Length: 147
Picture 1 (cartoon, helix red, strand yellow):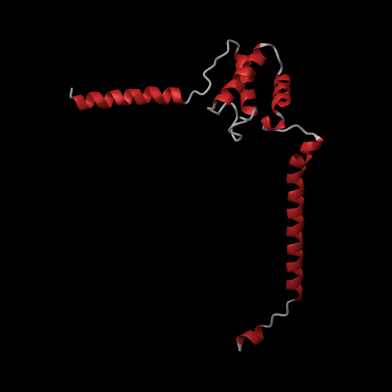
Picture 2: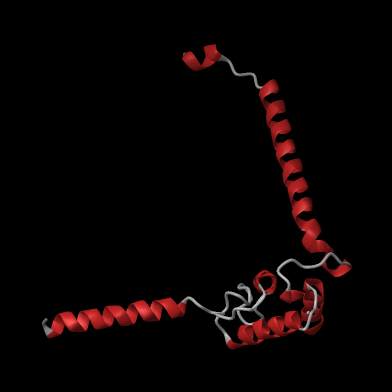
């Protein structure tokens, strides 16, 4: 075998190994499968405070790793999913939750889509009604346009 073929095979093997480990952000496996399922669900519900658009399950930064460890420790201590969410919300604020709770200060988050939809429907209704009135009053004369 030539040296070039050996080098290509070594580089290919190294890339295969490197790509396999690069995808694993959180390789932690718990002994209880139900606990592991809860852990994965919770880490996808909590937002990384540094990345802000990624869950802590998907974020590679150190802060997300600390938050994942904290979630794992709380679950292993016997806390329920809601207790974990409450603990994280109390500690980091409502922003950590991808689905904010329904409260007075988050009411606009829940009401804004409905209000905007109603305003859009009202605007569309007004435009259609005005155009219908214009068509009804239009005095288009075919004879005048032919000459």
